[in-house]
Amino acid sequence: MKNTQKKKIDTPYGKSPEVIIGGVGGRDLAFMPRHGSGHAVPPHRINYRANLWSLKELGVERIIATTAVGSINSNIGPGEFVLLDQFIDFTKNRNYTFHDGEKGQVTHVDMTEPYCSELRETLLEIGKDYEVNLHSAGTYVCSEGPRFETAAEIKMFREMGADVVGMTNVPECVLARELEMCYSTISVVTNFAAGITGEKLTHREVKEIMGENIKNVKEIIFSSISEIPKDRSCSCKDALEGAKVEL
Image (cartoon, rainbow, N blue to C red; front, side, top):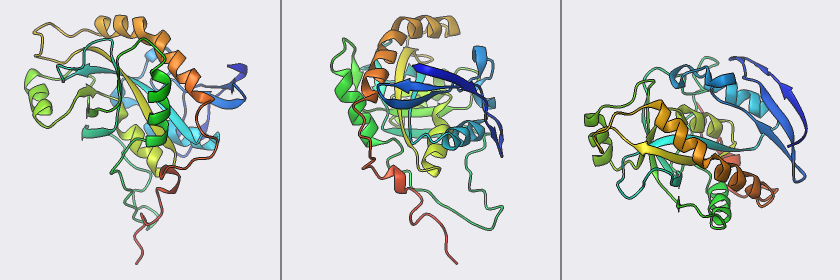
């Protein structure tokens, strides 16, 4: 990134983490660590509304997120990448929406396709140039955390059709949709989920696999930036059309 500057944005929901703003290939770019500096904020305490609102304030239209996930699907192994196309929400105590009805307006946003197909197709096409096993689709189940899941929970998630499990993608992608922002995710599989291998889950394992793969994640993202169409043709930009309840 060139000509970088750092900002913290005040929002109606609190202050954002420090955002690095700069340019890549003639495009403006903002980088936000969702967990804050030094990964200090656990997933269940991230201020998702402040994070997404601050990006909107900066003029961000598209988000490419990264997540470390555990695999529930035996055909998706550690070190492989997944471009999510669906999620199942098992979080419990988060602020899920900007539309809480306090101003007398009820809004129901469509989440049939929660991730931007235009962004995902671009990432998929670019990913073909790299020696990585990149899955074009996958269902993500979001658990509350910060603990890892039980073997029984993972068995249930597998029977529900989930492929990977993590703790951060919801409500992040939902809030992006409510702000009519495009959102796509590169999920890096760092381990098999609880009960699949019988081994103890540790954050050390997650960190090691993520560290081994972060170079390819960065290169795929930065190579994709110049290939993303300047004008959005997806439905994300019109997400609120027809979503508001009219009395």
